[in-house]
Length: 143
Image (cartoon, rainbow, N blue to C red; front, side, top):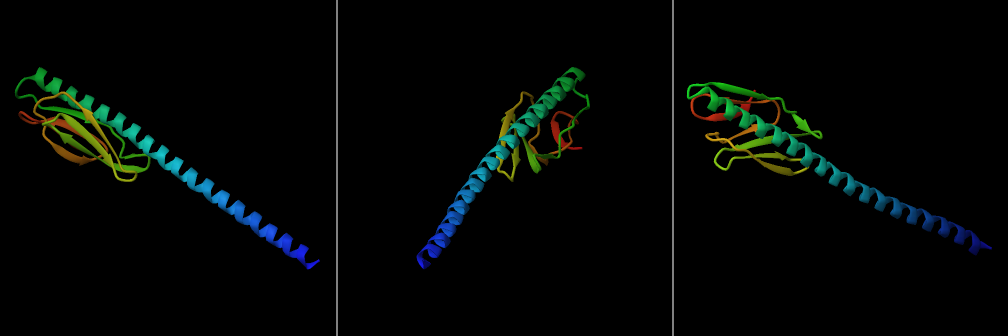
């Protein structure tokens, strides 16, 4: 009769062990899905922000061109400070006419093209930015 008591205890321990392993696997799988969704969310948001900023840089270029050589132009870009809970940086490459937005956690980089001449290359934190022209060049900087 003592064999039955051991059998029930072993059966109970094995059931708990199997349930623990299954739940641990589910938690790990869900964590991977959540991280993937977070990356996708940040990527999409950075893409939208990049397109908005590129449109504002192009608008500043058109205004400067229409105003003549001595025109001082200022176009404000109201952008969020954070995307999906993380900060980001904006790098404007005037030579290649590209804007690169990067976040660190999760690590995501998005590049958007624009069409404008004489844009200075700069790097700023994400948030409210202003595109200005003082003289010949356009510059994107923090507002």
